[in-house]
Length: 195
Image 1 (cartoon, rainbow, N blue to C red):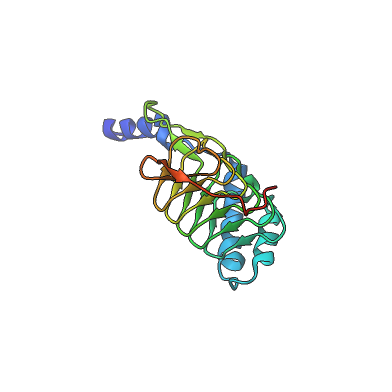
Image 2 (tube, helix red, strand yellow; image 1 turned 90 degrees about the vertical axis):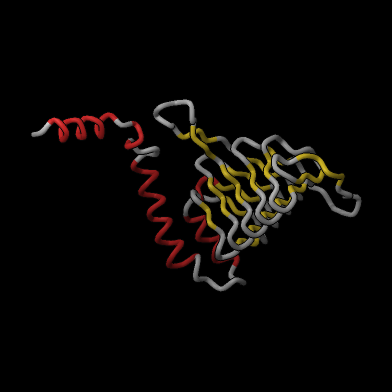
């Protein structure tokens, strides 16, 4: 064996980038979910919200009554998703949830919004995954193309505007926008029935 081949083999054996970030069980469950998503979830007609909720529940999700989860929604790990009643997750919204994601009653995640539950430690040579839960409060609205970072809590009634990026917790009944998101207004809620 040549020195170059030996060096390559040694590098691959010890290269932390080549180590799996998740257990075999987790990877197999996600592979099975991917098959169910492609065959049964994604092609289902838009009005079949109960059908998609059933599929998610089969994989451990907790989905409340009258939730509206659309067929182009991407959910990474259904077993880490909890939705209370009347939650809406629009087409092309992405829920990347290696840790739990909670969506409170009447919360909305709009088109192409991204709930990003993990990142990597860029200062560690092994570049390990760093995951944290996300909590979206009742009546909160994550607008189209907005992003919520790992470990963030969006309080009841808060709004994260179009394309905004939540890097810190959002206060109740407050409107945020921009990158990073900053307070841009208050939300009226006198006519909303809170839970």
